[in-house]
Image 1 (cartoon, rainbow over the protein chains, first blue to last red):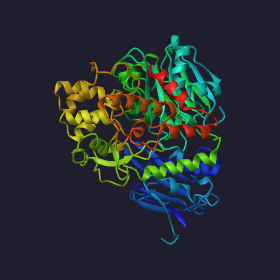
Image 2: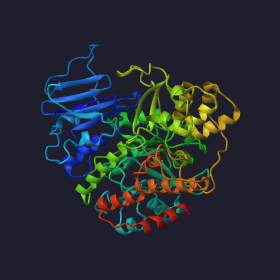
Image 3: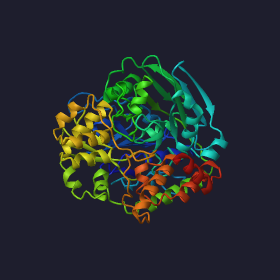
Image 4: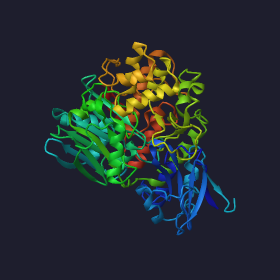
Length: 126
Length: 439
């Protein structure tokens, strides 16, 4: 099973991020969340969700979901230009991967708390 | 305060350029609760030094639904007495995680400065390069110079620097709840901006119970009257503008929510980009995020198209001027040309009606939205609204969402705060604090 995100449903509220942070730290904090609302393009209204998994990053953008294997160098974009990274996105690879809140009675907290049901559990193959 | 708190009150003296810290005393919280209860108390303590006070609620930045609000409290140039302005988006939450629950800003700096609050550290930094810039350029420069796109900003534009009573403190690039001319107050202090970024952590007294109940409240909200509704268009429809969806449709891009708020109160419109675009637009500034429902409604009633209203609102935000005040003043002239309205913003003057004794921002619609609060009779509506806003400003709850969700009752809020803090705040204390801050 893995976390799936419909970025078009997402309203960018960060409830998932804080719930994940609580799972990690037993307190309210955002530093250790493995699910993060991507919100660095504020003036463009371009936002989505990134999930750190064991061997991959799931990047749910409005135009679709991309799964990147961690450790594989980012390929050049369509234009041939390497995309500029946000400084704020760098710590993502240092975070613990999603464990589907295995020790929590609620199941994955991000799924449970999302107010618009943008986050769901999917079989690996789907 | 050990729980739901950073346990710090920051005192910033702009005259000397020095800062100091006080602990947030449990007794003060037990007596004044938080949010505007404590900012009002701090205002009284420091009122001889023209204080501007930023404050969080006990629930701000937690998992409690709609815990997005922080406040600015100061004497309004429009009213001459202490008023309160909410700020939300992600900035209300960010203040809590900077490591300061309250920030008391005193005096006036000799030269333009900005305040940089991050990870329990407060720096007063030179703002010579920012002075004269509009709100958007200021936020861009702050984020670029510190290399972090997630820095949240409270910013003034040229209107605040020039001392306009209509000047607004904006959040990042957008309008927010300041209808009191606090932009002018910051301008008089030579304080261009407050930049916020925090990696703090809030301990919870009874964590498991607190989180359990948050989930229960979220579930109740999911099945409530606001289910399936989105953005400013559904709010406008609820307020009686039945054609709002059709009016906005040509420009609507997406809706978004303030921190942990189950309803997206903000609607982004694209003005120079196809609003159906899903990929990242090439245009760096394709549109505007509508956060001020009243201003939008007034421009609609003036006969502007949604796109023209968007251009006006964007110009207001760049200049750092209260869009609701602009809409009211412009509405009286009958002007409908957005370019002419934009050109008139520089030096715009005029008076805007304020309800007698008002303390809370008219940025929040005066009626219940979606939710049934069991109200009856015209006379009770104003009292209901004032009390509802007082509760939101005390605890850190999004003030528009507070008017949507009867699930967030005073009883529930008090129970959750007591679980989260380990305090024993009572309904009697809440009643007394509300009476104090409204008097």
